[in-house]
Image (cartoon, rainbow, N blue to C red; front, side, top):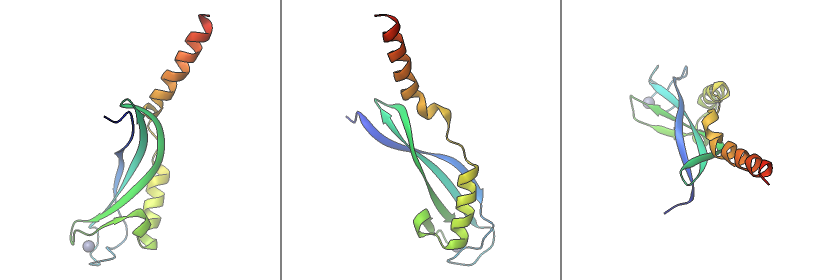
Length: 107
Ligand SMILES: [Zn+2]
């Protein structure tokens, strides 16, 4: 059993403006932004950075953000900048803070 672990969820998905770097077809590449987070006993604790993947529906090429060509990476960076971290990812930390406050008020 894992007490502390990592998970990631899909945050955003968008059609890239750029052509596919592999098959050069238009409007076939989709960019996805994933948010990684640390969980503690399955309670999301802290967000831990974003990752991205591009996927071409025409040639099925998938690229990780670090492997994307510059033009795709730019699309990814823009999408990433628009995506906010969901507040529930801090729930473990909020819970911990509440617990500390509670304990201090009851001593
Ligand atoms: Zn392609």
